[in-house]
Image (tube, rainbow, N blue to C red; front, side, top):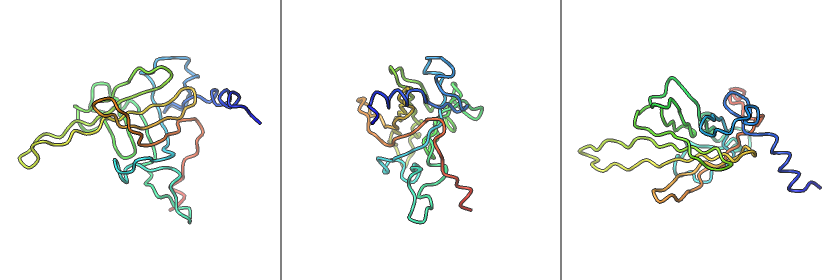
Length: 183
């Protein structure tokens, strides 16, 4: 029987997969701010926040059909010319994209030992005659634990309290559903 230490040592060699298909250990860098990632959602813990906009790759019915939309099962961060914010980063959490539509969106790295950590928040809506005090969009936090390559999607309250929304897996080689095969 393998011990916990042996299991952690085995998993530690996997690393976290970047959107370029390389692991953190390939680059030898420790600069969390430069990391891009592409993860799959393995469990949704709070489906009220994004409703159908966030789903798990393990959500399927008894006939094998996915219960989640193809574009709702991934969490990613990457540079893009389509981004409208200064950093050119887009943080995607399921069907939610931060940094794509409004220059007031926020996508920034957070310094945390042993964790690739990013915050993202959509710009609040402008007040209107019919909605003079629009709700402030939630601050999202994506935390990937190195070297395991798994993590959390959370919302962060103004007092710093984190609420777990989903578990993610960012390891290289994690199988993704083939939605095209269902057609």
